[in-house]
Amino acid sequence: DTAVSQTPKYLVTQMGNDKSIKCEQNLGHDTMYWYKQDSKKFLKIMFSYNNKELIINETVPNRFSPKSPDKAHLNLHINSLELGDSAVYFCASSQVIGQPQHFGDGTRLSIL
Amino acid sequence: DQQVKQNSPSLSVQEGRISILNCDYTNSMFDYFLWYKKYPAEGPTFLISISSIKDKNEDGRFTVFLNKSAKHLSLHIVPSQPGDSAVYFCAASGEAGKSTFGDGTTLTVKP
Image 1 (cartoon, each protein chain N blue to C red):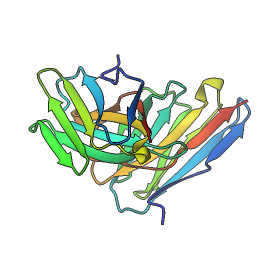
Image 2: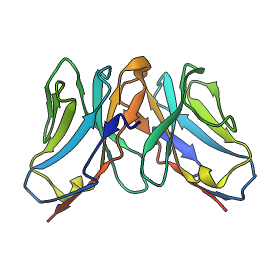
Image 3: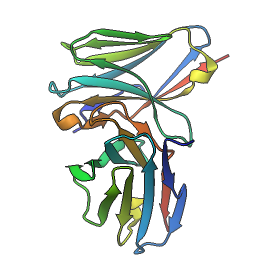
Image 4: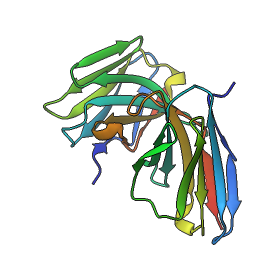
């Protein structure tokens, strides 16, 4: 039974489109995160939510909008996709912020 | 400004020998450090952590050492096994609990 699951695993789309990535955790954790891993393999935090409340919002274009309908879900919506958005996006969760995180297997986003 | 650095992009060791992965940080406000292991097409998996009040933490074959004055931590794996071949990320957290990751070291353990 997957602890942190994100869908889809692969996403190929055209520049300018709007897309969403979904994430769910069944660990009962209070905190969820979105990370972007670019071609240089850096894992950079984008957002963090604690109990549905946004607590970390890094310098990310406002085309990216996270949504947390409940504490088990943190979805990422991206408007007007650009070539530079191509990356692997990881969702993660932890019991409290800063503690060890459980990661999903990533969503590989490719922009044509 | 890269606050957490792993200066060796890759490391190759023989099975049974020790693997030492290094990580340097610049922010003295970091107070909790973690190591994650990542296999291809999977997410990172938490391995071991250390608080800034300690200088060593051991868990089976894995030991993390922290040298606060040098702002340096290392992960020792002994004995190394082929299944340890993966990308290893160090991470540091402090202010507001935000984790900052290094860019990873690819470890290859040869049989």
